[in-house]
Image 1 (cartoon, rainbow over the protein chains, first blue to last red):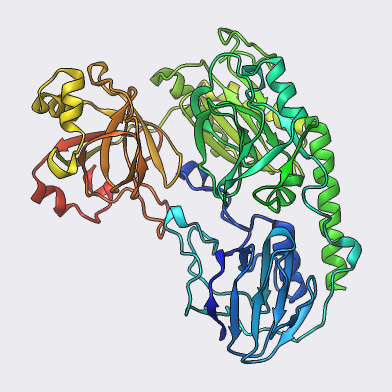
Image 2: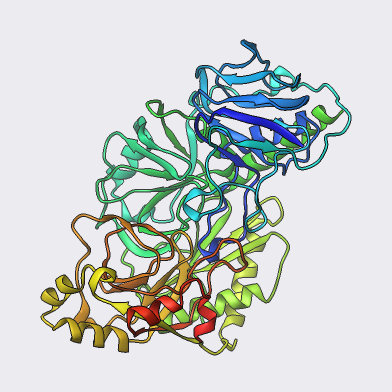
Length: 310
Length: 247
């Protein structure tokens, strides 16, 4: 079934699901929604499985016209979504009629918004996932005139809403938590202090691969290069110029720069909502703390899922 | 293989390899001697194979590299101390595992001309004639140390010492897929059209990456590759064919 025709593709709009983990040894990053909480929530709100593909769009300008009666939900960044010029409520299911236009007018808060449609977007499957990964020749960003289809006819139309207290707070308000290493011993004490005490601005070079950060350079002990090795998601690598690069879901899976730290899994969604030009700070936690935070995050996610599906 | 230490060793000369360190909250690096060496890499591959042969709840991927292996895990499924205990056991077991025999790929490669824009430059740098550069390069059996970067790039070892040249000062913005090049003691054959700072001396038209099939790349760690010189016509006949047809 046809869902939408693309009037304006917006900026870097791609279909994403929860990615293709398990192919790093074939040189393929996991990809998938950069803010997985928002993608899951949007799917749950329209009655989909959390693994359905959703639209990920940044900043503003995406404009779609409905080709059928649809149930959608928008989550993640507040990009002033509208239906036929009227505000479209976020974090809840919304019915739209054939011919109505969904548009993202202006960025208010966050960077990436997610639009789920009941039935799930259809897209070619590469290595078990519908996530577009342009560099890996797995799909393309949205184009004007493209028609988006639904995988399966949606079920009963139930109105669902995420209680306000579950909506994530402003992404850059709190520090991004990291575990130091694996090459923290390749930096001077001053370098580590610089990293943990400075505000870093997200540069214009920010995409699904990662963020280049601008701020005080981080001092190496003896050079920035290591023998190339695998890179975990959320790694903070520091090349010779001392400016950190945080690697996200479409990043290369191996590289030869020293990594001072790694963002904890529970903070990756929030990191993906920080805008170029905004500042962020890093705070070190222990591995045990990171695991504890992750268990809490999972409990929260389960609670959100139960609440929406209740 | 001996016991592991988790102590930090800033000097990098410890004899107490391998060692384990966290790499974020969902992966550990298991590091062997800090050099690019077929024997060191053999330990990495033996450990990767041992782990793959022994599926364990919460253990996700074993990623071999030159001298380190990254093991990804789900901290919600396995406790860290249990993970480390498993890793110790796998390291013990890896010492006695047999690795599969190496495969040798013979990839038809057209050297020089429009397909090898840096052949003349490399020739001048290493003070060999272009014909000698081609001869030395094409006689080398390159070993696939591991697959990584992006789009299944094979990290190759075995470049003859006399072909050591630096990277380009300014990387090319687009190099076609299949280009065969060298830089800084390393060699590669890039798998998709992409920017690169390597010196490209030839091109193979054999398909090196296809995300529509599994596995998307033909090589595994330990395989060997010969880039056999051939004329343009013959090289182009390999267009779109999988590398496994050239074993």
